[in-house]
Amino acid sequence: PPGRRRRTHLGRPRRTQDHAGDRGGGGGGDDSRADDDDDDDEETEAARRAQRWTKRAFNHAQRGRLEQAASAFEKAVRATPEDAPYRAALLINAGSFLAFSGRARDALGPLREALALAPDDARALHALGNALHQCDASADALEVYARALDKSP
Image (cartoon, rainbow, N blue to C red; front, top):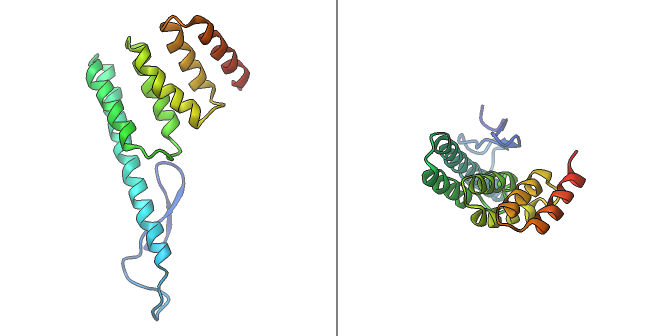
């Protein structure tokens, strides 16, 4: 029904738009709620786009199509708003893929951005340590691995 709350795939409640008009009867509608609904719709669509590109990236990677996978990860990152709560996880996936596909130097940017968003994320630290190790930056890698161990549950 219009006006009920439902969960998005991100797990946050979102109010559906009421297309039947104003329920309170009598003018003076709240434009800020309509703006919030528009923002929710844009956020939800951006999340869906990023999710579609991420699925494509994993499918390409499983089939050994590394360039197509890297391109799909890049499109997923571009589709994701900088303040999205899932951006760090996406960057970790993209960076890890790049590192394990032989592009460790390219992985450093996404992994460092993930750490800027989630500085205590042990997965991001571990992935960055792997990329640094592959770049022959062993001292830096050991430091990052130690931080990952400190942050791991």
